[in-house]
Image 1 (cartoon, rainbow, N blue to C red):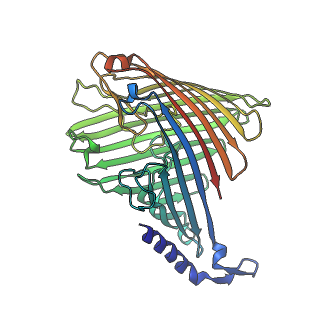
Image 2: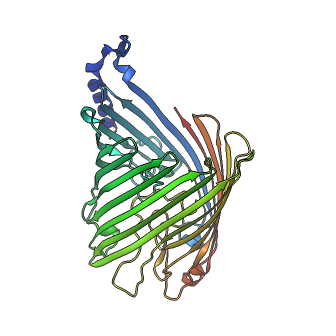
Length: 427
């Protein structure tokens, strides 16, 4: 993989070569390196998970230090052509047998050197509205409830995909298709996503997505998944940006083979920021996703697809947009320039407690049981973010999750704590 990445970078310089010298807009000499920019990000995060065992069934306490480095080369060797290469180094410290072995470290998937993004984009082809992008790329739409780059992860998410964008002044339409090679059959994901900027402070997105997972989504009882998801998102601000709001709804249909699938999900949030020195904001939010009734053959649990869930349903990552009622109250302040402090409360209920509660990753956190309580738990999240300048920012957070009667009815119960600190430098 390392040799492949270095070869890719060398190829970029070769492609840029023919444009080594040209006349600029004002007649000045323009070299190839004037059309190449270098940048990147270095991120270091410490995490501590305390008293998780009674809720997750795994390790009780765990702490780790994560490093992620993402340099990039962004080149535009000729007008309308963009070449973007972004390798990634990600590492969990003290998780390998030897630091001089220089192996793939298959036992620790957080320790990798890989290509995060590498794509070629033909922009506004021949002066038209059409842009075509092919290669490994991030896909992120709306507030990433269904399709996101999952930036919180030390590895993140990108797609091997092709994308065509039609773009006007206030409207864009993306058509994309991606694929993953899986053990029991390939996975294909694609669709259409459109955005309309109704006015500067108001947007409307609509989408139609298709997932064809021939691997059965890792469930041996399912021979394949073929799902369509249609939905819309409406968001904006008013009253000189003091009032913010967002609404999203989606319906999902198809088959979790051999059974039919019909599910739905919704999101509604609003907040008001007071025009005072500390800019205090008060907000409320409700998230819902249907769960599966085990008494019927039809699958009714909403499939969360490929989201960025970490900042949506509690920072401790015990919930996702699947079999969920999430009632949220939040407040934040900005006491000094660059500093934001935020406090959230989540009440989690399960529409179908006989099914399960699902983690942010989509994996089962706790299997359900007939007659179990719908009260899954309470979570409080405290987050502080300090932006020193445009290159450096810091995060400090603490979350506590107290299990509800659902956990007592299905096994052990307890209270989990999550502490983290993060520093990010961009260049």
